[in-house]
Amino acid sequence: MPSGKKQPKNPLQSPQNEVITEFTSSLPFDRELYFWDIVGSLAHVDALAEAGIVTQKEQKSLKSGLKSVLKSIQEGEAELLLELEDIHMNVESLLSEEIGALAGKLHTGRSRNDQGALDLRLYVRERVLETLEELMEFQKVLIRIAKKNLGTIMPGMTHLQPAQPVSLAHHLMAYWFKMKRDFDRLVGCYERLNFCPLGSGALSGSSYGIDRFELAKSLNFRGPTDNSMDSVSDRDFAVESVFCLSLIMEHLSSLAEEIILWNSPQFGFIHLSPDFTTGSSMMPQKRNPDIAELTRGKVGRVAGDLVSLLTVFKGLPLTYNRDLQEDKEPVFDAFDTAVDSLWAMRNLLSTAKFDSIRMEEACKSSNLHATDLADYLVGMGMPFREAYSLVKKMIEDSSGSGSSIDEWTIKDFQKYSTLFKDDVKGYLELKNVMNRREVYGGTSEKSVGESISLVDALAKEESSVIRKIRDDVEKPVLQLLR
Image 1: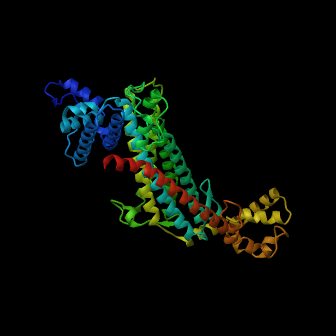
Image 2: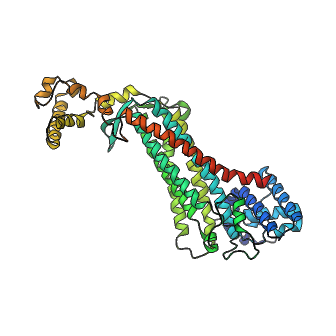
Image 3: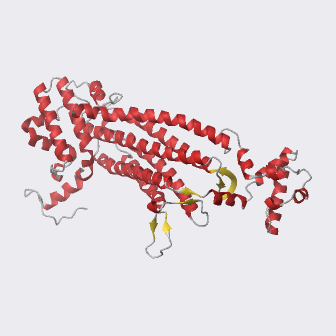
């Protein structure tokens, strides 16, 4: 709570009123929307001119003044005042200083309700684009590493216990497909948010004959929102975008956890670049995977942002309520955190080195061919449950004697079943075990190679989607600011 001991900035304002001003003002955070507020205002001025509400001369003066205000804010010359409550009123005040009383015509036919809804949609569009670009760059790193490691064998885990041999390529491609779903979810979110609320007024629409379809088109929206009451109260797009970011962070956190484990001496599967690890303040021998740990921790921030939004919007009656002022900070924080985490984890992974020898040794010491040994017996006619029990006994005996099944002779195998033939040793070689999984989506080199060919095609589609969204975001800016 702001302190009531401060002296008021305005001599006519009491200390108590200044406390209320500080509590109710959204300027400390919604100032981040200044660029999109001005872009939206430029489009609104054109709509007013089209409707005959301002003359061409006034249109030119208003737009020139708005561009001057934008420049002054960008260069840090403009003073934004807390007592003006929000970025919208600050922009209008600065415009008045630029062009005088004409600035009073800017707000004709609109409310801060539809203006604020527009600004946030424009902001989220831009940040969705940025996130999609980071996701695609991360996917490129995963594909690049996968192509180099089609034959690199490592333990696949269930319950964090060694289960079956897989390739490093297959393992990392699992994250590619998680990110593909993240990408598609964000694109779907973008498609649903890409409608223009401007022209909805405070709640019931505008009486000034503004062409909302042309207004939406000028900002490269798909069209205007369909209901004025829904337009000013809807924040579904904010919740949905942060939900998408939450899942991105969940996936990054999962990968971060694996990197942390793989980087430990007990695993030794990966060696992280010193540029992306930190030292200990006391123990000179240590390098800590802080980026991965922080990413694992930051998922809590974004999940918290999602819960915050859901809680703010719960039970709000139509239409606008001041509670909606609380929509911005969680959105800003979620995008900042997710984009920064994607960037950091991408660079951490792209500079890392994998120890293929250590990975293969871990497979050999864990009897990861046990399932295939049972499958071998099934192929010889033994029922699977019987084969499962027999192999379990063989593994137990091997462990109890301190030997490894890999060291057994054919005679050792035949002590358990005469179904074992001379080819069993070759059958259990790790590469053969891995490459036997040739089903679609399996871990064989052939299957993973086909998967990489598929994602190369999907990556081209993603690039096309990003170009389209970039046009939506950037073209109206270039046209309105020229």
